[in-house]
Image (cartoon, rainbow, N blue to C red; front, side, top):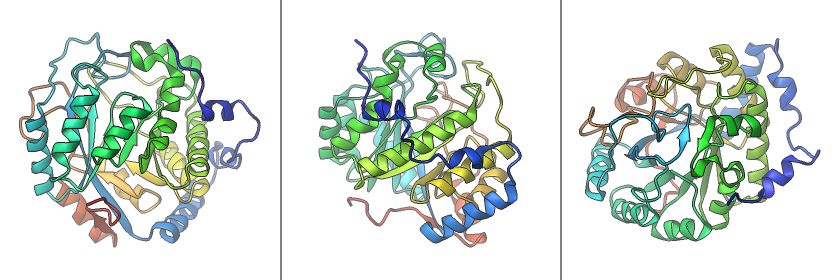
Length: 348
């Protein structure tokens, strides 16, 4: 049964938008150099020169949802793997040895292989190993989020992928994720369960209007900050990359447009953390750190077991920045930034 619209979905139906000024910043023909400089000034003022580093840890690529753009989609004939809890801990230890103190547990949407109890076991086993843990999995009930928080979970990441309801239905053809409203309300349930960090975003190239998705990401972030003011909010705008799905973006987003989107977000959302993954090439990542990015992954693998036993399972998507964590940290230091491996506010 589909879930009724949550509070943010109801807010979107009103005319009382919180960040209408982003339209001018996203308009074609904007002075990109001037916008980037504005974003840089805001970033330095609010965040200084500290950049958090994290790593995704893929625990499973089993999936019961059919998403036309994803390398984990149910109908694809790919190598599947779900790590045991001991294997998850081994992967985490290898990342800790590289310097990471914040990990993001990622999985496909499989309520049997990646059950609430499985995630609980993973979080409980990792708490003595990793100071800060977040998850990017299927949506859960508020009771499950509360259990995970009690076990030590700090963050939940749920990208809406696209906020265009019609397009969302076209690319999510079957499974739990097909429910647009359930997906959109997931951050509300997580916040109400006590999750300390919320991550949202849109997958650029999925719809034919990337500006509309960026505008709604900004609105979503502003609404979450106002509604759950004790919760940290981060945003990300990943672009579609090659995967086993063979999906091609409807309208590719150029590098210049991507910089415009990130810089505009920073200007209208000065308190929001902006996250950048290894989907993007090294040179672009290096430039975006100097403009607006405050959190980035490094040395990433997008397959389950990919740090210790690569090649045994299908990756979710291809990465573009293949530098090691040490190389990314060295880049930051050379640019005058401080790589932050451990959040000062982590629970341990």
